[in-house]
Length: 177
Image 1: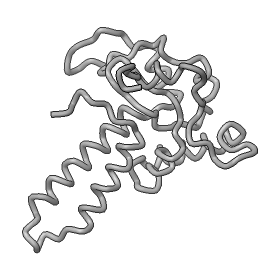
Image 2: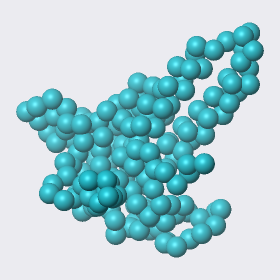
Image 3: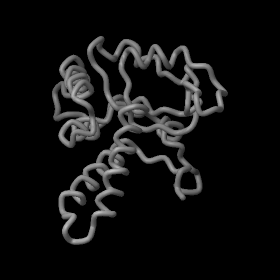
Image 4: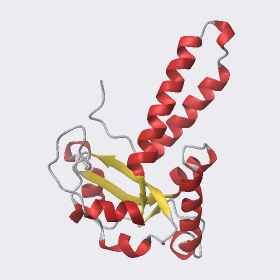
């Protein structure tokens, strides 16, 4: 079981698409009804998890600010024990009122609040994002065009990490460098 491993949103959105493709290639007539059922169950679970826990807009940001920490129960609001002081200062002003996006990663006690263009745009193409979320992502891209595109092709990630920041954000292990 790999439940302790955290996969980035981009990896999960690509995995979602791979599951969709696998389901399309199978037909119930060839004896794969159980596999199709398993794929459907996994697709539903994955889409719920991403849509519910990775989504960030002004409403969700305000909710995170009010989170209580150290809640450990099935009905806990703060299921991942996120500390509100982890919210980066740039984020509050950066999210437009009608915009939102799917965050880069989520793991216990940590959210990667960066915007990853490929994952968010792919979530629209693959219907991983809901219709409302898709519109909000596109609203954010339009409102933050100067940050995301400006004088160059679309930036893959915003904001870019500087100096040693990547070690703290990504959970770098010195043994692997």
